[in-house]
Image (cartoon, rainbow, N blue to C red; front, side):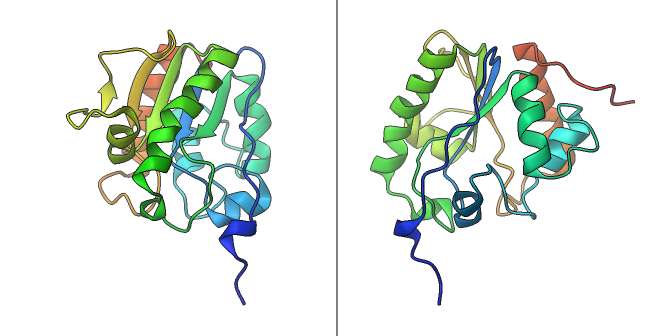
Length: 183
């Protein structure tokens, strides 16, 4: 018997002092909700891309090991929608639109330099901009540069670990996040 998704807890934001980059997922998976660790599914390409980009060291191979390093380097994680689902398309547009206010509150609280939303479709819904494209957006959010980066989900067939790493490195460097030597 599967666990009802409505009984799963919300996942707390990953945040700490000196946040420079806020990475924004769409919503937590059931595994993320059960563990409390962002991007917890082992098939997700988020952490491999961060390691390839040098945002995480090579030995930060699990979400448990990665989280404190990210906080130390000034990287935080939140979601547009707090409700766990197996797939992001199970969210309502109203839930995704409410994400703009959720993210704005995190930005006001932590004042990162850069906010990077992972997923163009969800960004367009949350921010009401059907013409938005990947990359730097023309408007800021609460004083932070607003970016759209690819979603690391395996369902996003257009992105590879290599292209994710390139895009995540760009926002990290823009935010002033320390990265490892990638040579």
